[in-house]
Length: 556
Image (cartoon, rainbow, N blue to C red; front, side, top):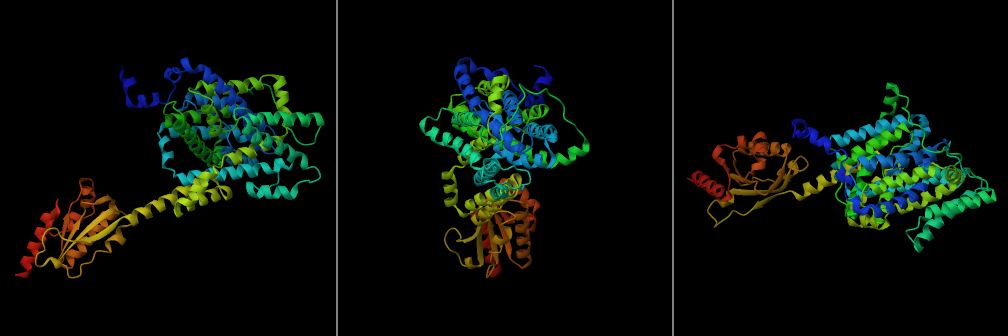
């Protein structure tokens, strides 16, 4: 083995790349992978069209961009990603972030936006940030998910009412309310019927047989009625056959600076959603663990590849991944087949003609049901009844997601969760005066033994040490053997306490400093502040004996 191949950096980079081992199980599972891939491809078709149309709003090219994203990202993420069963493509969460950017800047920036965001996600994987998603608390994740579902639902209201989204508020909830005021109620019942019709197929059909792609059945049925009856309303319209030719987007330094905040937001969202989806898939299927860092690299490369075809930024799709695993997918072959199926649909003029006749209101119906299904009501009920802080985190994250911004919501949620965690830790910490061990001796009332429990850190240090009382005490023993956590602030405050007691004429003995806290205790001045180096003990009994001998000497 050469030095280059054995170098740690080379090994780390190799772990982020595809290998033949990814496909070895497919020798025995290719049939189930093939069946799962075909099913996911059929399910993904209406979602790709709907998410693309929703992200672009009144701008042409949305459904095409959605299909391109599902095809290209599906293959690239499957090959380079860290999950064996993840299915990637356009998602509702990405639509929420992308729609206002495209409304403000136009679809011309989409290619560069994909390249920038994808590159950021790749860097996150290379620098091994994949496991940071585990630091996001459960109430924050659920609040984030519920907020996204509300936004997706509200985004479909204008299309379901036949109202153009141009001129409406950038906030989805406000725009939904405005759409009701702008709807032409003399003809709005047609798009409403289309949306309700598809929704009915999905809801009622799933009660009959969950394995049938009822969203596609509903779209075919409603589109057929629409075309035969020549009903009014906007349809997807002409789509090109096959994939567009790849090309580099227009790049300039000033444009990159303008797009940087949006690209960073998209990158963070893509990383979070992809890792959450892959983690859920790994927990609910025995297809092996996923590599979070490699997953980031794969998702980043997928978005960069999509940018060359002027699609949308991609993420791991929770719903399509769930369909994949529930239909028996075992390897990456299933996700690749899903993309092949979609590519086949867009490669033939006949199928393209059928897709182009789908009413936009019918696609809105697909997403209305999808949004409702994103909300696990049982989980919400659990979070609202567990603890007050869980309920506050959940509600606050959901409200901020809907009213402000997705990334702000996650950031504020994490900060709030950290605050609650610190408060809980500080409350669990304590300073307790305890009885001296052994039989009582004369003068014991002048010896105070304090045991510090839990955590002595910046959020608790001052409050805890204020409890140390030296009334009638000539010697104070501070026991640190039950101390679990100490930071530099805690060490510094403890050192100041020892110094102030010694200045007041009280002898301080330190007992039970643990090895992991010794450096901090020295740096914070704890061991320097005691009167003598022999006043630091490893056991409480010798410390008490020394304190009693000190009292005896004072009494003579």
